[in-house]
Image 1 (spheres, one colour):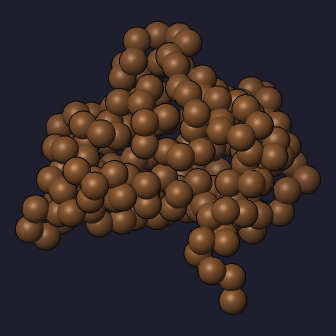
Image 2 (cartoon, rainbow, N blue to C red; image 1 turned 180 degrees about the horizontal axis):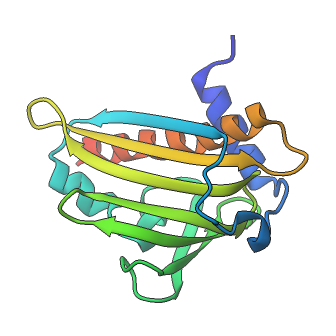
Length: 179
């Protein structure tokens, strides 16, 4: 049986290896949803407001996701729908461009879509939600809906996105517990 650490490492390696680049034409949203759903979550021993402050900025993913070396807003205003971020990945410097679709500070959530990048997916939309759990804990839920890129098996695309989500969520938990 493959360990969780191995799958996370494998997903990061696939992500950083430059896998099939997806062009904007492949990810343009026509309102249709993809066939693959991924939902990962984690409970963090920290209050929701603290977690949201750490991960809620659209341009701050490089501060909490270990696979992202840098993030910058290249179009629009940060945290405003329509803002586009350009991510440079750790390792080989692969890139991902994403657009913020919606953000709700009261609900502590934001959703975004892939414009183009090295992920082996198309028609990709994702949402991150921070919500109160038991006591002073927080539940972070990261969901995605997409199709596999041409030439990529659904299971492989799902494995990569699952690894991206779990790698980020586990790092947030580690960061919050270190404070």
